[in-house]
Length: 257
Length: 199
Image (cartoon, rainbow over all chains, first blue to last red):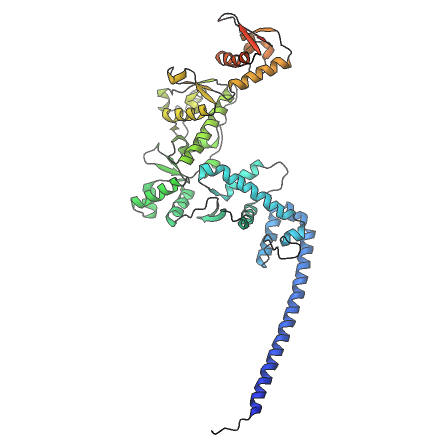
């Protein structure tokens, strides 16, 4: 066996270098971690300070609350996520603000659930967020803080850990709360979107606007009727299918003149 | 009669509200909405007996030019027909709603068995509730032991302001009948000049 004169030292040298790299790397990592930790500590205290000085605004001013929540989510802090592993438990907001903001959302969530279950008979468990807000605002006492659609969406988010069937879906451009675990297929979503724009649809309207065949349009409409998400008006030349959302608002509730 | 017109709810301007919904849950929600509308409408106009039959002419040419014609008489014609969106509830659907209300104790056919046509008691206050109101009034005004004519009770000055003032005489009989059964009142006298004594 012939051996070229590289020498055993070469192995030693490479071993030493890699060890040096490793130790350098770990020292870099630890200094990075230390720096991050300080940054995080500074950030936490600043956030805390901010939240404390503005606690009143956060509680009473809906747009301020929304901005704060948006800022938190932009920097990756979920103010409502229950981080029970943390000392004391509860979310960051709960820790920072003495639970009042959290309670605000939980109470709102209860109201959302009430509105949804009250109207489930007439809308099949699908209701526009705007309508939920209207209903909640109507039942609120005078002087109670304003509630935005943003707050309602966040409140629905707080229901998630309960494994509830409440979720937010988009129909067209508008957010809806769905309180019945049921997936809409694309045809059904398309019909609801059209109803949203036009007020009502008929089989032939779907055929013309969406280029659907008659059976396809009929199936989509019948499915939605079966779910209780559309109401039919038979007192016209062709049956018209309406969204129950138009009953909660839209037409003015004025007496006949 | 109340001077101001009844403020119809939003669903009254929702066209499918006038068509019987095929989905069971939706239909149930529809029945609830109709029955609460009927009750609040009758309460507003103080209608005790509602005649369900619609006048056949009212569908043709709603005359909007003269303001007098646009103001219909309170009753089934106005309640089950919305000329603004040109929709009406069919008699069959009206009867179904009434049946729904009967199960709730909120309506009753005037002629039992449906023999006497389509006139219905609408109990925005049930006879028991009327009886309770009368009893309260008797208690509150110290009328125990006195004799009042039925006419006095609903049309006299003494009850002006009481809720049962102007109560339908037949409904008054029903309410007093309940008080008689409970041993709280006694009715005597002839058809036209009946009196009642409270205990």
